[in-house]
Length: 115
Length: 116
Image 1: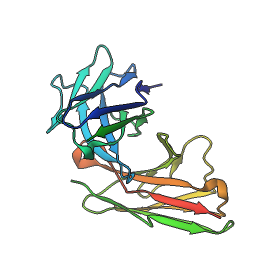
Image 2 (image 1 turned 90 degrees about the vertical axis):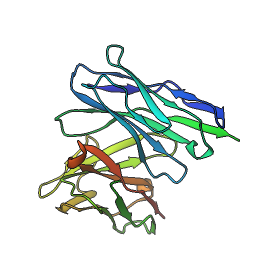
Image 3 (image 1 turned 135 degrees about the horizontal axis):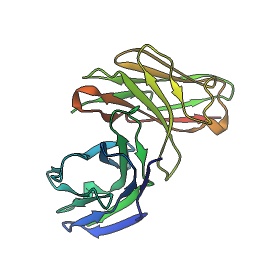
């Protein structure tokens, strides 16, 4: 069975700083997707970034980028020039390709951006 | 981007009554929708997977007779909490799989259910 581990329960940084959130996963599959979702205080779950395992290039979405290390089964999220609106819970998730499309979730990291 | 709506956003009901929550994909078709429950400060717990036109698949420990799921169209899935009790009070979230965007799930804003 697949598992997703987020080892940082909570992090806080100053506005405009760069922060990296860690995520590791365990799977024997070779084809899968990885996601980072953000859940702000409104509790609306928002997709931040996705990565296909077969792609070697790290995904990037504006200030958000990932460091995908397939061999190490690591999928960290880097947020550059952090903003107050980035304050949220961040969840890492795994999905096996061609499966029932269920997401396996990490426990989440609470990120606080301080002014 | 893909938008999923959920209604109501907040509902209070008396113990023993039933509550229906609707989940709609507004700008895409979703053959598969998911229902989650989220306890405070915790991750999402999958309750069931709903496929359009067929019976939902429930996760272990989730009572299918208590949490009725219907996915009658490609844009609508409903969750009915039957004979609700205070322990059913929680935050319920739905998501819809957008098959045109390589299987990414998009989430509704959630429904806070309080059972008195």
